[in-house]
Length: 136
Image (cartoon, rainbow, N blue to C red; front, side, top):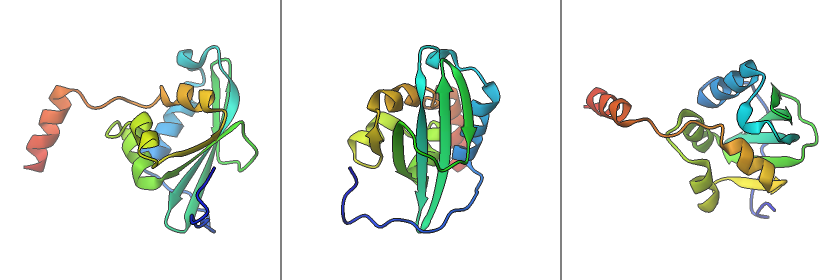
């Protein structure tokens, strides 16, 4: 359930970035073995100020299709753009974001948890060291 003080974004737009790249990669794979036993639909609502992006993910026994439809889904996840981009790039963790209240899931939480397994993990030690050197 969403907090009553939450404002509802009014406009939509298509953007690029880590979230769009991650979802395009999921769609391009067509079949995801980690979701081989899963069937359901998930709507990701990415919020950026007064802008709302809808991503519809249809999973049918591992077959995954991603679209920009705004239709009814078994589970809905509302998430701020910065948090979603961090999770999609491996810099953030979906479960930790849910526990902090940054991610608002509704509906079939099992589906949300199973889909969250597709997000990349944190960069390994070599990638982390390279990023630290670059930032210096």
